Image (cartoon, rainbow, N blue to C red):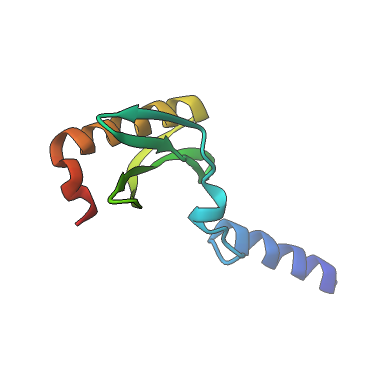
Amino acid sequence: MVRRKENRMSFFKRLFGGGPAESIETAAKPVRQVEHKGFVVVATPYKAEGQYQTCGIVSKVIDGETKEHRFIRADRFAGLDDAADIAIKKGIQLIDEQGERIFS
């Protein structure tokens, strides 16, 4: 009888997010990268609620130091490749709009 209650509690923990959560940094793995105007855009989508969350890193070496800007967007996709494509496009858009100010 105790085992059944534990299984039920485990189910509810998973259902409502009560279990251990994997951090974005460990879940988000580099999938693809491109260079754009001296910057590097890396797509790092991660699994969230059964889909892939759009996530990435924009970086550039400035005065010998690598500067990074991490971004996460609300966009989610069923496929990893779709999420990576959008992450690359969003990173390029950030560079075009903000340039090096992105690191401020």
